[in-house]
Image (cartoon, helix red, strand yellow):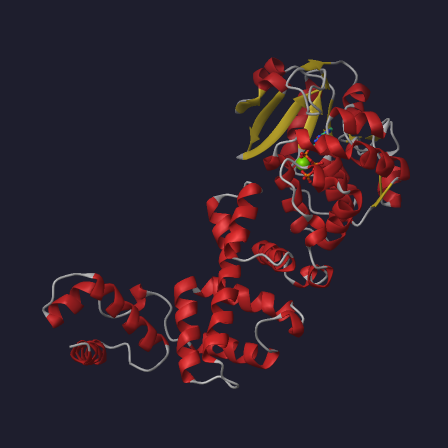
Length: 417
Ligand code: ATP
Ligand code: MG
């Protein structure tokens, strides 16, 4: 565990308080996974934590959480607490501070998340979380029916952990989940999405979707997400796309749901994705439609130069990264489910890699230069001319030099009368 968090624990101990690492960080360390955020729990009350450390932020002071900054790193330190009454199957805002760490561990969702670890490496593990991590089992702390009834988000967390860690779900926990699934309707879509995003960037998203499907959990989300509509043959390829490019995995999910670009946008909006993410993902679907159009309208058996230019314009329009993403997705889709054959796909990839430039700003002439050369005032024609020059330079038809570009713009201008 990080040195800085040790200093926090030592300081709390030195002032007579109990303090431990707890939750995700203890679990991840036990599993040999990278620890990303370190939560600490203590008998000290928020005002005492603030008094003991130089730099603190009252992040969630009403819930007992103070962020302690140690050598520029943030650590969440939370006072032992229990939660108040759960209304509408959501975690309550009201909490009560308690004296005993076991009470704090008891409010946590799963046994593997209810382990505390002391500075000297001893564990406080009243619910046998250590054994469950060894056995790879997700088990509710206490009665699953009650725990999922209190807070319905825990059901999606359960599926998320099962999918990301490859853990099995204890029988009773799964039964409780299936019984309480309808309560998911009370949970905000944003919170569900955060969990599903973790499923998507995990090791085995397919397993996550299968569990969501089997439990019928998402049918009860505020926005129905039509899990069963997804083509499992396509979905089964999802792990072939790197978790680092998670938007490609979302793209493949949309292919598996047979969404067109507009449907994809509506779907992702319901999922409360930011506009940026929504566009990044659905533009991957837009390319498919453009390519389909390109192949249908030209109706050529083999690819020729007019198709090369059409493809290059698609790449320029959608951006190189999106086009490469599309190619990557196509690479994992079985051939009979694609718009283009594997052979054509290779050619599209070669054409993409041969493109000389990708942005207007890489052209050696500007809009101003063009207006000056042609002695014409600005107008819609200027944008068209710039796009034309970008296309011909990108395709290697015209050199990206002032002289060649001047010649080309004069030639085009003359042809257009
Ligand atoms: P992650 O790896 O995504 O951070 P995590 O288990 O650490 O997983 P957090 O949201 O950081 O998830 O929560 C920290 C701890 O708080 C959990 O390990 C668990 O002990 C507790 N916790 C979080 N959400 C809930 C919940 N909905 N119900 C009960 N306990 C919860
Ligand atoms: Mg965490």
